Every structure is written in C-alpha cells, then in structure tokens.
Length: 396
Image (cartoon, rainbow, N blue to C red; front, side, top):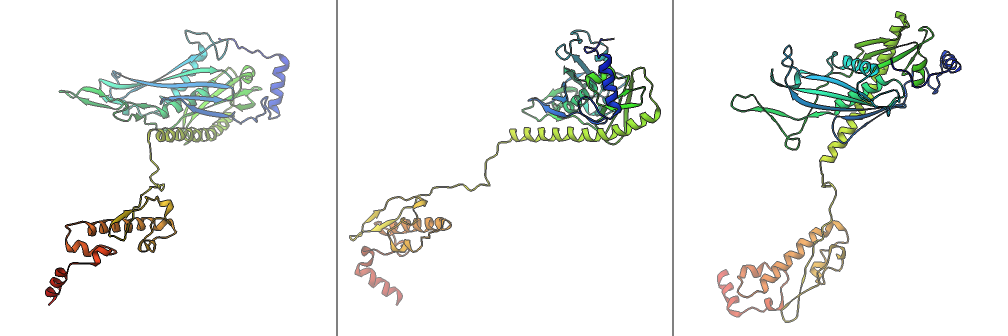
C-alpha cells in the first residue's frame, strides 16, 4: 500500500478528532459541507477541469471506431483511465498505476458504465462491425483529498460536452462507414440518461463521527471511507466501502440520504456550467449583424433653380444634416420639415422636381411630359401660337 506523504503526529490526530466531535473541521467547514466546486472547460469539446478545494483533476474524452464485443454487437464501449502524476503528490510514481489509481478508476467505472448512464446503443454504427469506443482519461493534477468525487465530476462534465463525428454508411454492400468532417456536418453529442454523482464519507471514532468530502489531512486520520454513487432522482448506482472499520446500518442509511441531497446540488452545478459553455460556443460560431439597430444612410438631395433666361442651375449638394438649407426654391421649402422623420419625404419630392423640370426643359419632348412638369419657367409660359389654336380646335 502506498505510504502517505503527510503523517500526523499524536497531537495533530487528537486535535482533528476533537474538533470533529464539536462539529468543526480544520478548514472551518461543518461535517456535511462540501468544499468550493469550480468547473471549467477547454477549447475543445470533451475536456473539463474541476477544482474541489485544493484537489485539481483534468478530464478528457476521445472516441474511435472499433469492432464491438461478440456478446454485445449493437453496443459501444466506455473505458475509464486514470493517471496519477508525481506533480500532484510525491508518493505517485510514473509508469504503472498503483493501488489508488486502480481503485479510483474502478469506482468511477462502476458508477458510470454499470449504471447505464451513457446510452451505449447510440454508439453503434454497423452492428457487429463498427461501434464507437469512448475513452475517458482522468489526470490528477493536485491531490488535496477526495479524489473520487472530483474525478467523477470531471468525467461527467467532459462527457456532457463531448461531440463525436457524424457517420453514414455507403458503398455497394452498405457496410462502408463514412466519417464526416466536423466542418461539413455538426458533431453529435452523447446520449446521457442520468448523472451518477459520487459522494464520499469519512468515518472517525469507531464510525460514530461522519464527515463528507474529506481533505488530505482528514484522510490520513480517518478509520474508514464509503463512496455512494447516486443520481439526482435518488437512485443508488453503486456503493463502495474501504477501510477496516465497521459502520452501523443506521449510519449508512443516514449517509445515503445526505448523498441524495448533495447529488442533486452537484448535478445542477454541472448542468449550469455545461449550458453556459454550450451557449458561449454557439455565439462564437454564429456571426450576426446588428440588423435590428437603425442604420444612418446619407442620401444626397439635388435641387434645381430656374434662371431668368430659362436655363437650369444646379445647387450645391446637401446632406440630410443640412435639411433646413437644402433648397432656395419656395416650393420645396414649404415641404421641408425641421424633424428628422420628414427627411425621406423631402428627398422624394426634390428628386421628383429634378426629373420633371429637366424633362420639361429638354428639346424635342412631348406635350404630356411638359404638362407634368412642376413649376413653369418663362420659356414654358411663352408658347407658339399654332399650338394654342390647335388646342382650341380640339376642345371644340
């Protein structure tokens, strides 16, 4: 068995036990209080980072197409792998996993895989030939106590954000698998029925004192430990008892009731963190234009003024900000308004005057175009005599 890094003295052990008898702990918590939980996610889907007090765990999920087991040809696989880094604790040695790493992996695997939390049939692509094999890697970055609960939360958070590539079958026999690129088709999330939450209890004083979420120092003093994996509905997924100290059945039932309440609280925190991550990622993908906001468009207005000899003179082009000084023609100034809402109407009327006036002054135009012209010029007022006689004869 691995030796503990910190070995308490007799006085330290007595201090921890007596403080627990007074419903106080070394870090200031009560007996059934969890440490501060913080869940963050990486840039890629399927990566999570959990901080439970001083305990720090990193979870990462990957998947690949493999051949299924013969007894379950329509189901995928789920495997849990743990890595204890010497950076987390000096007693952890690199290479072959020790007893603590094996125990941690088995407890989390029993709670996730045997409880059927993840839908394995949805991972099947071609029955008997190709299924998805999901792998969860848990890296212990800092050992501050209660690694089981922190690693379990990291695994659930990583599985909730993991997306596998979409697959289709093709070929002549319909057995060829085509894995689509994530840019061509959106990846598919895993189907998770429920979230089994692991809640660990530590026993002191021959099982009479029970605390939840033990720290590293409390684990060095405790006489036994029990981990209950329960979902938010109160269903017991697994129970694991470690340590040689016995516990009464009434104490076990009390721990299960407390674990049910803690599991519902932790489940809501995981879902809230996953929802915020999903929303933030969706907003990064979608590029929206502020179409609802009013856009200011500068429309130039042109007015014409008649000279004494019948020629047209173009005035200076004005922007909508200079509406009050837009024209010198009295006819157009009557239509102008000091409010900004009247600017489009002013633009249309001024443009209509430009078109009609220019058409009346052009040579070779028809009489109908001259009649539709707005203010008449001196040239229009003086008409040939034969045109006036022609109109009179037509009316008669």
